[in-house]
Image (cartoon, rainbow, N blue to C red; front, top):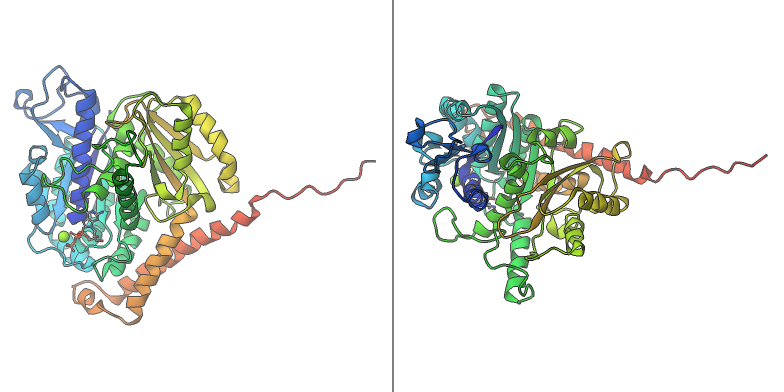
Length: 474
Ligand SMILES: Nc1nc2c(ncn2[C@@H]2O[C@H](COP(=O)(O)OP(=O)(O)OP(=O)(O)O)[C@@H](O)[C@H]2O)c(=O)[nH]1
Ligand SMILES: [Mg+2]
């Protein structure tokens, strides 16, 4: 069995991370009714039961009394981490896993990356090393952060560099929350573009999530709940949006949104957290979905989001889940994958679904989805038999698709609007070690990434095979 470590950085990273831990514990409690510390649990949690010497896995029947998340919590403000320590998850972390300062990075990537990145380098490396030493076979780092804030974008991407330096063989999967156009952080385009360069160069996979998409999904669900459209189909306490067990114990504005991201993480990690012969290994994601190293941005969609089947799933409803995974409304970024080009696609299914269901749906959907000509069979599938709590089945689709491009183009435009006037630039240039070249380099990195997607998109028109020439029969 392998293990993973979650590194959550900044306010957003920690708030999303805690939703993941809370829901993961609920899932395990649902399956593991006797509370035995077993291999499945050891993938993301360690057992510090003093009866077991305070360390190593006890799979011999000891009840779970003391589980610690395999996590490192980093924030340069104390507020969120302190709330976590006073909230329902306080037992899940201990002080050796936390790295905090008091003043925050002030929405400035440079302060996070450079100032705090240098000051906390040793502490970060040590804290991650301690977490790694508790693993038998460390397979993956999950980094969670926002692109808009200073700590998440700056220190988050500095941490990514450190992970690559210290553990080059361990896969780095990053969940990055992109700011909406109406974001209250004015400098978020700078922070995001500066962070993008680091993500492009140092991550194995990035799962971009746009806050705007989360807002739209939450609104739509709430509208359906209030208008009674869901009827008996949606469960009130669905894990999709429920704020139960959030950071502070009382629901806050981001909680419903963060729950969706947490569900993405639950699905992607389910194969690692539960055993099964058809599971998809975490290493296989990058291996199968990333044909070119820089093009590692995977667009995720989750289903069901709007309808929850509660009893015996008729196959029509199951097929709908597969159809929905390719619709615009189920994507976690503002994108329409069906009308862009697929480089590869993974379907990670949970629950009561058979391999034949997967095959049937891939065959059904394949003709409607444009794939690059050299990878028409670019499907990867995984089946985890344990569904999310309250569901019979669920699906996470991860698409390496050129539909990420508009998100990046919009980000670039917002960056250029500020950069053309050199607005707010002095805040960054005051930070020791930061020069204007950081900005121009980050901009050209993003520009060339966009061009790479554009070049692929341009091949889409050529996908229809040439019509055969007339041959006269002799
Ligand atoms: N989805 C989601 N977005 C969040 C959350 N908290 C903040 N954001 C977004 O993240 C961006 C701000 O980043 P934060 O994570 O608050 O900032 P930080 O990393 O703590 O950095 P500093 O506060 O600048 O040191 C904005 O785009 C916010 O809308 C959250 O819990 N969930
Ligand atoms: Mg903050």
